[in-house]
Image (cartoon, each protein chain N blue to C red):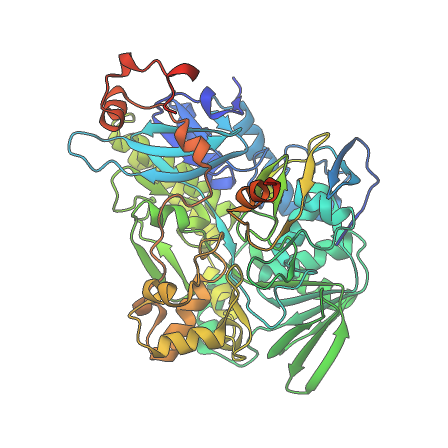
Length: 107
Length: 501
C-alpha cells in the first residue's frame, strides 16, 4: 500500500466495491486505490489468489478492474474521475453469466 | 504555436505525415523536431500527460514541492515545454493496439489502430516512429505475485505522479542503477525503515573492467557514486544476495534471503523488485520488425540501423525501445529518427539532414559512453533469470510455475511459441510481457543454447485489449461493407424495423 506525502488538496470521490473513497485530482486509479488502503484489486483467474497492481505502467495487467460497468480496465492507465464506480474482479469471467441469470428466472 | 490535445480518436486526422507512438523523451523530441519542418505529426500516448515513465507528470510537478525527485528528473522540463509548444496533435489516454505495415506495392501508408475515449480509428501514415520505451525485466522469485510486491519502477511512478511512498518496512531487492536511484529518492522523501538487498554478482569479471575506461568519462559517474555513498550512509545495504523469497499468506509479510554469510529473514510490508530494464518490443514485433538478441543487455531488441530505421520501410524506432541507453540518449535518438523519417520522405534536403544527423549522433555518444560498463556491472545473476524452485510462478497471468515449463520443454517443443500451446504461458492478458524473457532463459538453459537461438514469442496485434464494440464502430470503406453484406452501401438503411428478427 502507499501513503501520501501531502494531504489531498483537490479531492475527487469514487467507490470501490461500494465503499466510498477519495483521491487527489489527477491520480491514476491504481495508485489511488493503493493510497486508500486497498490491499488487492482482484483475484487471479486461475487460483483465485489475491493480486494487486504491480508495475503501475500498463505492462503487467495485474490491476484489472471493472470501471462503470466495463470489465478488465487497467486501473493504472485510468485517471480517477468524480463518481466513478469501480469493482474488483473475482476469478474468471463467466461468459454464460447472463444465461444462468435468465435460467434462474424461469418458473 | 501549441500542441493540439486530442482526447477522442474521432478528432484525429485520417492521415498524418508522421505518427509517433509514445510521449516519453524520444517521442516528445521526435515530435518537436518533425513539427519544425511543418509536417502533420500525431503523438499517441497512453498517459494523460506527456513525459513517459522517466519524466512522469513533469508538466504538473513543481520542483519546490517535489525536490526529492532529483536534478535529472527536472531536466525533462525543457523538453516537455518544447513539446507543449510544438504544432503536433497529441492524443493522450490513447492506446495503440496495432500497426499494419504498408505491404502492397504502390501503397506506402501504414495503418495504425488506436483507441481513445472508447472510440477506435485506423489512421494512415507513411512514417511511424516507435518510441515505446522500456519495461522492467521480470524478476521471478518465490512470492512475487503477492500483494505488497511491486516493481521498483512502480514505486518511482507513484512517487513522481502522486507523491506516494510505500508502506514500511520497505525492502528493495535486485540490481541496477534504478534501485539505488529509487532508494535515494525514497530517503529524500522521508521514507523510513528501508533495506536494500543487492543481488549483483560480486565476483570479479573481466568484461566489467573492460567497460570501466568508458564509464570514467560518463556523465553518470558522479551521480552513481553519489547515490552509492548516500544509500550506504542512510540505510542498510546487503550485498552479495544470492537467493530471495517473499513470504506471506495473502500479502507480503517478510523476505528471506541468503548471502555467503548465511540466511536471514526480515519483515516487509512492501517489496520492490528490480533487475534492470529491457526494451518494450511488443508493438515493434507485432508490426513485423525482426528482433535481435543483445547479449550485453541480455534482451531482445528490434533490428534497427544507427538512425533507428527498421527493415520495414517507414517504421523507425527511437529511444530505449531500440536498446537501453537512458533518457538523454533517447531524446537525441528521437530527434535523429524524426530527421531520418522526413529525409526518407523527401521532406528535407539530403545533405542538410545528413549533417544534422551526424551532429546529433555525436551528441548522443556522450550519453552512451560507459553504458557497457553498467550493463556488465549490473548483469543479473543467473539464479534470478532462471528460477531454480519448480514452484516459482513464471507466467503470472496463467500461473505457470518453472517446474511445469521444464516438464513441457522436455517434451521437445522447438521454441517458446510451441511451448505456449503446451502450457498457455504468455497467453494471458499481459501477452507475455512479464514472462517472455524468463521463458526464453529457462529454455536456453535446459537446451544449452543461447537465448538468441531460442528466440522469443511471436507477437500479434492487437497488442493491447480492444473492445469488439470499438472494432465494430470503425468506419468502413464502401467496398468492405459490400464484401460483407452483399449489398451496396447506399442500400444500407439499417434501422430498428429493418433488423433481421
